[in-house]
Image 1 (tube, rainbow, N blue to C red):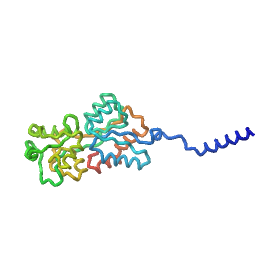
Image 2 (image 1 turned 180 degrees about the horizontal axis):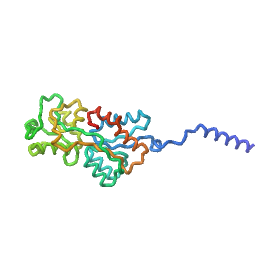
Image 3 (image 1 turned 30 degrees about the vertical axis):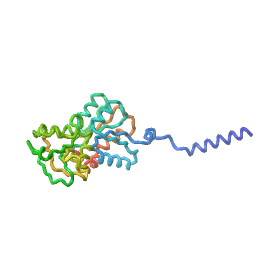
Image 4 (image 1 turned 120 degrees about the vertical axis):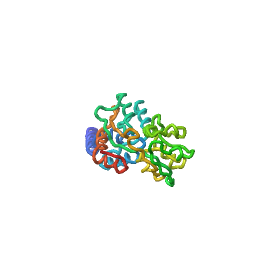
Amino acid sequence: MARLVLRLLALCCLVAAAFLPAAAPAAENSGGRGPLVLAAASLQESMNAAADRWAALGHPRPVLSFAASSALARQIEAHAPADLFVSADEDWMDDVARAGLVAPRTRARLVTNALVIVAPAGSPLRLYPAPGFALMQALAGGKLAMGDPAAVPAGRYGKAALERLGVWNQVQGQVARAENVRAALALVAHGAAPLGVVYATDARAEPGVKVVGVFPAGSHAPITYPVARLTASTHPDAEAFRRFLLSAEGKAIFRRFGFVAH
């Protein structure tokens, strides 16, 4: 009788095993999430759209974390876990690469952008950035919102442009230094600053502002966004998602949000 019971138990175990799910794929071994992407704050809408499309293709949706490129680079250098880094300039990607944290042959230019001056949506102002233009007068005692020129890429580009046009010395005491470009955009959208220097794509994403001036391309270095896989990456989808971002379909998504993608 005992042997019969043991045989029945063994048979039940075999039958139950036949209905168990197969071994979890690699993506599920990553907790069911997609790769962790650290991306510049100005990429919020476009990168979310790209992540949504990737998920629609049947992959776990990437986990996105947005901040100033400087803050993200420091997180990477402090060995925070991440799979991909998308910077708003080449300098912060250079810093991460010098630290040996960029996977070889994975760095590539993703998109480019333009630099503009914004005002609250109802402003009647119109500025024409050129040598000696009347930026100080347009501020009328108010603040010029921009990313911190000491670290934030948009702030660096903005300072370079204002220096090239000969007005930085006049306005530097009026600068409200924000932690990232979206924070600068919010200051203008909420009326805390009459003018701000942001990317063209930021202005497009915020109905509370209007573009009142466009900086000449030659007034600052090209605004490029490099993407790279990090050496700490262990997610099996990381490289595939990086390649998707650089694909024709991926770049078409960024173009929808005003970026230039070749």
